[in-house]
Image (cartoon, rainbow, N blue to C red; front, side, top):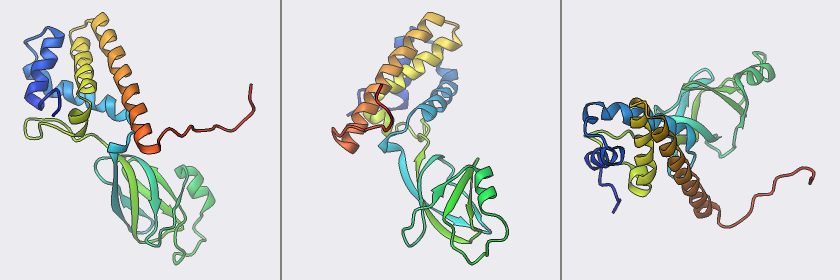
Length: 203
């Protein structure tokens, strides 16, 4: 069981940590701001999802909760290479026949573009945004397994709203410590104790 049991409990706990009892009417705004920042910062296994994207004339809409692509593959399992849109369009021009299967993609906003131009389904593994907390969706995976991150993120937003610079700084520091610890544990769970070697000269 989580140390914080859902939306209502999070509201009460964040108010206690902030020494505020006048935030209920603004709580959804604080939640939205906190989740926006967490979506920018977190890239962990629990955010990974897989979806089918249907392409028409070389482009197709991404899932609404899409943040960042992990892999894009064809029905036969071939993995497409990732490019910026400018590089993609420069490398694969209009002279390539439509019958060729794509081997590269680019993401612009909520749209995927592939080249050569092609129509059909591709499988996308991606990082998904947090399912937003609200009274009708009182919990999500992050609140269940790392309630401290949510709590400190909200305390930070409340302090920013209250123009409490010191309080915002303290909450931001606690949030970052909790995030770093969470990311380390996530990497150990996914990859074990293997060390990642980075190529290049040794100083």
